[in-house]
Length: 376
Ligand SMILES: Cc1ncc(COP(=O)(O)O)c(C=O)c1O
Image 1 (cartoon, rainbow, N blue to C red):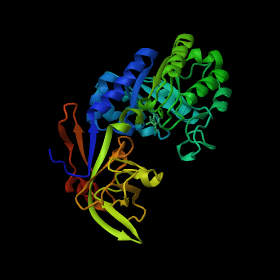
Image 2: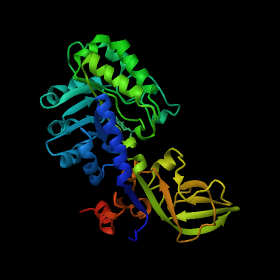
Image 3: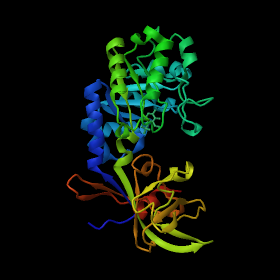
Image 4: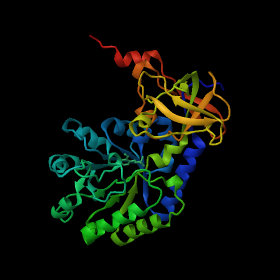
């Protein structure tokens, strides 16, 4: 099948490999697995993930609605967000099985309503930082994410059984479980047997389960929490499920020289990968070759001067019409993609396990028009 570019291609085999890995871990440790759909809320991905997970974790009313569209009445939907608003609370309680409050003030305001239908939890900030980049650190100074562990310790929320569970999420793309072990150790040191008053702890996302070799520390810590404290343990990975399960294929639309460097313009841009610009992330490109003789600045086609993917090496000089594949862009790319400059969003394809290429979505001028044409 001839695909139009830019094409966001979801690889079903990789997705299922990731889900199977988590399925094994679920069996071995007894943890429950939620897919953090903020990473990629594509309905087809949710359908594929559904049989492998206990539910979805969400951060808004729209995500909760989509989660229930896919799950129906079955399955769990866990909400964690600093942006809970009063007008949405009732509907959220009808959609979500679990609601985690981000602050004591939200708990005081909304728990009486939320707990009529949902289990309620508190996001705790364990104040253990594992990132040197504050933008990814939920435990940074003056964090807005979760109740400071010291404040929670001083409050009587655990003794008084005012919450059913605790939630924390503190790492970004972690490739071993050291942060998890340290965080659980700190929680146990602070709260001791008060943790037994809870029903569950949600360990959050942030671990690249598909790139970790030694799962034993995870299995041991989850088993300990389940057996000793009689708690249900949840994890909610996003990137670890979809990150490496999609790539973006783009076409070279122009090549020229600027101040002695070869510039190659693609029919994609940082519009489709905002994190390349935001975090100056260097994407993995299939056609790049470390020993290649030809270098080129790979750039996007918007008017933003910094819309540049970086300098890469190639065996042959690139030409108009060549294809470039940006790898591992399954998480936080298509969901953050936008149409700045009136550039269309990438079409979405599923490469099935049988190798068939299915077109899931092609955006049109009508989608752009609908977004920007006002009724008055
Ligand atoms: C509360 C919460 N849970 C889970 C996730 C998923 O994290 P990741 O995609 O890194 O696994 C995030 C990501 O921002 C998050 O904020």
